[in-house]
Length: 360
Image (cartoon, rainbow, N blue to C red; front, top):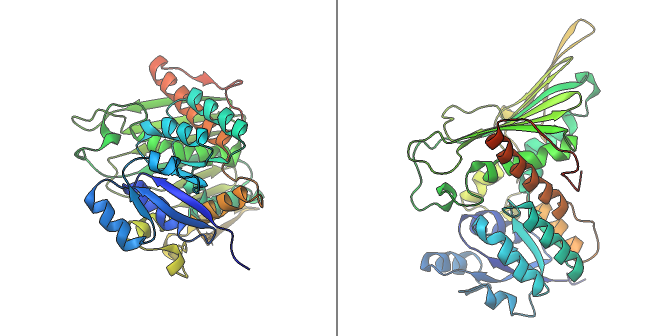
């Protein structure tokens, strides 16, 4: 039986388009990449080598005006997510937007309303939900032996003590800085794990000399019986734990990171690797409990990571076979928490979240 094809136009062929979108879409039989905005000659060379059936175009209009294209993927700088997504929805296309969804929750609300009015799928690429470590954490937090989680800490750190030349993420622009870039992932994961917090407090700072955008953040999310701490920075030379759980009966510690990003940056394709998404056992998480006076230590094997699962769900949602996993309402709530985090930094106070979220 022939697979029904969904024709895709990709807007943006920088790191995001080349590394995180095109190789993943290639792994989904229902998706056919047909047009890509690629203006630079080096981008066109890569496109010809890796995706020879896709056409390079200079402008988004060449994609939006093509009636044969069903799905438009926006993988541009953050400032263009909202206008390009709006244009694509108005053109009658289904839309996937790279995270963060938009720069403001007001923009997100407008796109959500527009997509519903057009009857089109709208989703945001929160791909870290499909990481091996997060999939493992989803099970760990349900382990009743923990005896109740009191503190949940997540770090997303990098080391680059200098500024990257001509990098828009490092300029003082709306949506730039690592609170939008990395913090969005951690906020999304937390909402998936624990739902809506009662309040938040944020400490946002610029630490590197001559930096213009936020390059360090700490976000505290307050739950009735627990606090969540989300941290990220650019000065972590020594690897830090990704997840740490402090519970009444013990702890869970997870070092290392999901392997998919490194493989994608090395030019690998998921559909060519039978072990895709499998973690090195050396970085499996460790559960350490005290139960009935007995010390219990367990190594928790990590679940398989799979970014292709995101785009497989997009294809199935467009074809009416599945419900959307990453909804625009969920992604909108991530943006609202970022906005309130910025407000908390400005006011130096705890901000309540009453009536601020719509999906949780």
